Length: 458
Picture 1 (cartoon, rainbow, N blue to C red):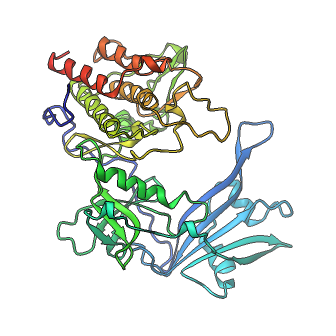
Picture 2: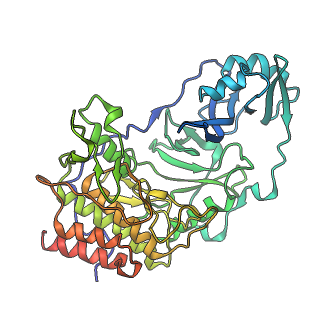
Picture 3: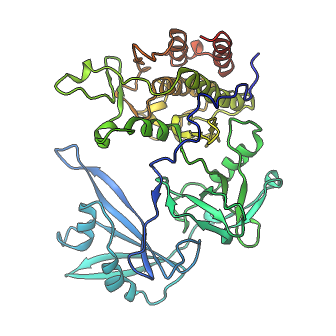
C-alpha cells in the first residue's frame, strides 16, 4: 500500500520559486485622508425580461471613516444600503445599481455622513431618494445571538494565538472576500500570512459562525504535508474569542491561478485567453483561438509543464484526499481552487471541512442540481468524481472550464501530440468520473496507480 508523504524531490522539475499570482492586487489607495470606500455588493439580482442580462435591485457600500487602513477595528465602519427606486428613475441609488458600482465618496460625505447624529464604530444606514432629496435612516444593528464570536475550544489549545490588534494589512489584497494578507507587528522576520476571518463587521446575512471554527479544527487535526496547517488562531485582545486564523502565505496562489498565469504568459490579449474551457458530451472549447475556424475544430494548446511535474502534482492532490478519507472526512468541495502551490513546488489542500454547499462544476451526476434547496450528502464517491476532474485539469493545465450538461459525467478531451497525457492516466481520470458510483476507485486505489506508474516511469 502506498504511503502518504513527500516521496520525491520535485525541485528539478518544479517551477522553482513560483511567481506571485496576478490575482493579488495593490491595495486601494485613499482618495481622501480620512475616508475611503472599503467594498460594495450587489444584491437581489434578477434576469432582465426578454434578455439574458442580470440586474441588481439592491446593493450596499461600506466606507471606512477616520480609520488606520493597515489595522483592524479602528475608526468608524459605515455601511449604506439602498434599493431600486421606482419613483425616481434618475436618483443616485438607481445610478449606482445600473452602473454596477458603488456610492462615491462625495455623495457619502456631503449627503449621508453629516446626517448621522450618533456615529458608532459600526453604523448601518439606509438611503432613499424622496421628492429629490436623499433621506438617511440609521438601522438597528441588533445581531442575533448566533452571530456572537465563539470561544476557542480545548481542541485548539496547542495552536499559537495572536491578537487581531497586532495584525497589519499588507499593501496587496486578494480577490477573495474575508481573506487578507497580513504581517504581525513586532515579528522580526516580517513573514506574511493569509488571514481568513469573519466579516468585519459581522453581518446577520453571513454564514454560521461555527463554520470557520469547524474549518480550522479539521485543518489542525490532520497531520499531513498535503493539508495546510493553521499557524495562528486570531483572537480579540482578551485572547479568548475566535476571530479567524492565519495560514502560510503562498504567493503563487491556487492551481487555478497558476494555470491562468501560465496561459497568459507572453500573450497580450489577456481577456480572450481567459475564456473557459467548455466540457460537454459533444465538443471541447479550448483556450487556443484560431482565427476563422469553427470553435469545435480547435485543438488544445501545447503543454507548458513537464509530465513528471504534473504526475507529482497529481500524486499530491490525490494524497490530500486519501488523508481526508482515511480520517473519515468527506469534503464535498474538492476543486482546483482549493489546492495551493507552495514556494517549494508542492501542493496543499485548503477548505477541507465538510461543506453543506457545493461547486456546481464539480458536482457528480447522481445529484440533481435542479432540485431547489437540496443539501447533497457527503460521500467518498462525490469527492472522487471531483478529484477526477482535478486530475484532468492538472494534466491538461486547465484553470477554468464549464460543464454545459451537468446531468451526466463530462467527456474529458485530451491534448494530442507533444506533451500529451499518457493513456493510463486518461483511463484513471475517466474511472473517477464514472456514472456508476460503484465503479469509481477509492482515493487509495488512485494513489496506488499513480505511485505505480511513477515507479515504472510511465
